[in-house]
Image (cartoon, rainbow, N blue to C red; front, top):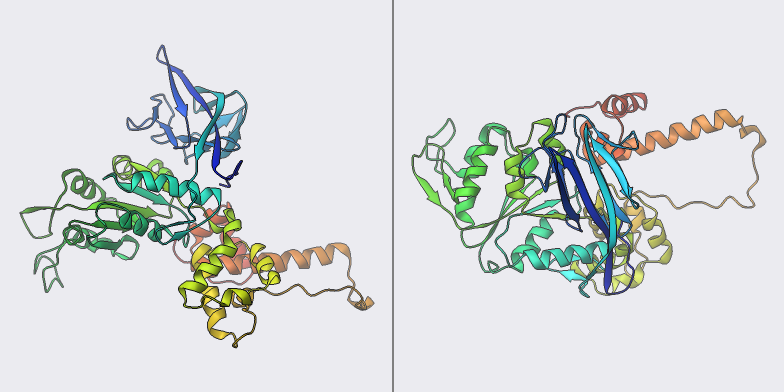
Length: 442
């Protein structure tokens, strides 16, 4: 979601009041820059316990442009003026419904927040309003013991957010332990999270200490938490609530003292409604929610990011070898791999460039410079009918577009569907049509 800067120091949010009338009473909540989840679950910011409403049905949040209303993958939909919506901006008084439940949005005066003047927060960099607002939230949350849920696309820097929180917390002198939940085999998830005794299962040749214990005095980062099997989730919830773990094969609980930061690229709210993620675990993890914007949503940060990355690679002067034309090409790119993709391209360009030569970062991405056609003779035999030319151009676009997505997602149909907004059946059709990699996992 793009953010607008109204001044160099202040960020303005257009919020309002959300009103629900049900069971003979009227309830109101104030909409600010922190998202409010609406749904049937008791832990929702606004509970609507009516027929057809999903556990986590929708959410509202104030933005500089108005209040954003987003459906969270509900079963019966979110409706504005009898139109089913997925993501809509509310700028005037509006009535809407979640299934059969009727709600009303009433706009109020603009809320102003002072943004930090800093461009860096730990290992994070950004001068855009979106990043500086993220820094503002992290500055407030880092010194606390609250659990933080970091959400964002692949490659946006969610691990860097966790590092920044750790480095600016009272636990910075303690360990920073990373658990990649996305790489854990489902059958080993419990043993990996909580540890195991020697001989607890086939292949357990040695005992293993829980990473929660290893993180004592510091921070444990649960990356890609949305990949955890459903049967392990209640055990994790209990561990977080009681601050103790029991190793597989043991009868003893061991207490731990670690701050928890979790991250996911998945839409956990939709996963809750789909029954693949527990709502009680979600709310336990999301005491503070932090969204890391995609690079395409903060392109004003790109030149600065390139400069910082070159400095991190040990070259403080290489920035002078980045041309305006190169930056223009980078700014026109969609960045499906986000900051990680940019960092890789910068590293490749620096490694392959001759001393003193311009850095071809766009070339490292495989981007072709547009070739001028002015003054070039046209081969009359190559001119085709309008419809033939259009069909050929569309075919070329589709193949290039989906080839890039296949590469970025390793042909994961579900992820391509999420990024494009297309149904999975349509994604498969395009992949087969253009002879791209055979679809694998969902």
